[in-house]
Amino acid sequence: MEKERDHLKSLHKVNIEKDAMRGYTAKEIDLSKADPFTFKITKDKLYFTIECKEAFWTTYHVGMVPKEI
Image (cartoon, rainbow, N blue to C red; front, side, top):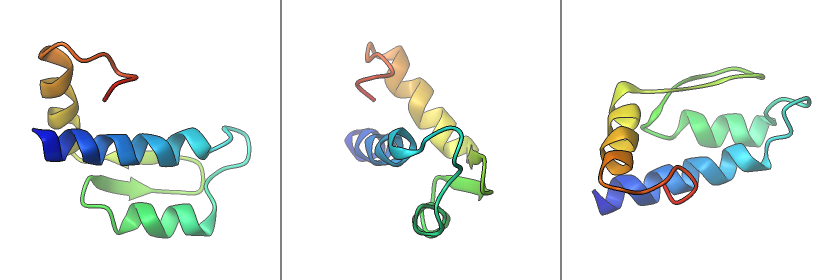
């Protein structure tokens, strides 16, 4: 579970850097495409795999708040 939490934190950092109105940069898209938890990414949207969502919910249900994940 530690590995999944660290991975989710790294995904969150990429998403925080994104300004909602500008879209993802080519670098952010390339980084996200290489990520095993990324299902699909477009200029404007990032879709996560079911495994990512399950890891998030598992971590959330053990008591961590989304900001900590």
